[in-house]
Length: 176
Image (cartoon, rainbow, N blue to C red):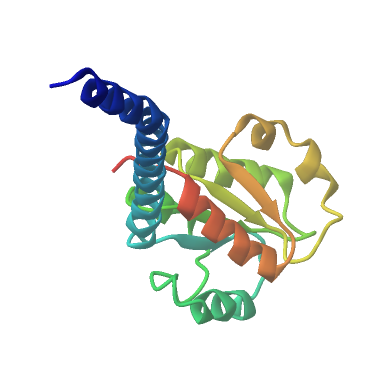
């Protein structure tokens, strides 16, 4: 090989090296983003395949038909229960749950709530407290037990309830 051929090849290599490095870096970052996105979607669909339950604590809450129908209209949540349950003894038997929803209102006693929270917290599952639009449940926002339970959120409206269900199912990693 002549010196001009070697110079030309060296110049081409030096010119192509930044483009090659840019390509490899872009490929690496893209593959990492795809892997992250895949894990997130897999988590969502794994959680969507598991049931969740809705419990009411207060005797004044007759049903949650409006909220349950709204959840069922969203085709993601095909494991939505048909009705809200009153008997919290079933919570301990349901270890395969993806999350638990507790519906409370102004007439819910703090003692009843604490008992229900203890049962749910023993499962270490995400908890959504649904207040049926009542923002005046003063003891709820100062309750020490709920502040100590990190896997909770409070929803005041049906739309926020659906949003919180989706958010929890897409972010929380359930250990089976």
